[in-house]
Image 1 (cartoon, rainbow, N blue to C red):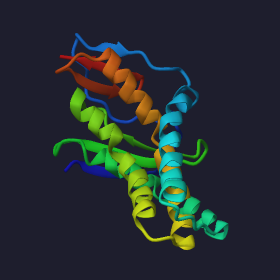
Image 2: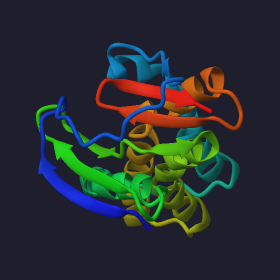
Image 3: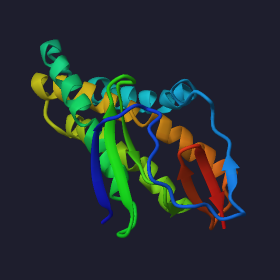
Image 4: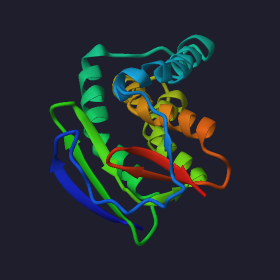
Length: 195
């Protein structure tokens, strides 16, 4: 497991320690505004969430929901944002350091490791936090009708499925631009790949 270092609240443009890139490293093109660029990548996860709710409520026919519990589900989803970043962090190698923290100004969390990682492992690392969305939705789907559980699991599942939108975008970009067998290496100034 990598060394995980908690940084606390940091500015979004904070620089972290880097490992030098090889001469053949090529810049990966990403949108200038990551948050705006990632919005379309929330459409499919949102449809997935509504499909789970639709199956439970209209196909199975078990509808139970108490809106008073929804704020607690949202709060739980927000409290799990650091766990989202830890799920990214555990995918790195034993000798690597991962810096995790939050940026209150952007209302975002981050996990940063400027070390090489295989394309395949990068994709897995990027998608790991999806588990935080799938788990409450599966609990909701498989449990008997329960207004409390629905009020907690639905908003938590939706929030946790949407919070990885920038990660979904990165996976799409990496799959299009990085050849099989290459390494992905992030730096303070962007993402790079090389063989």
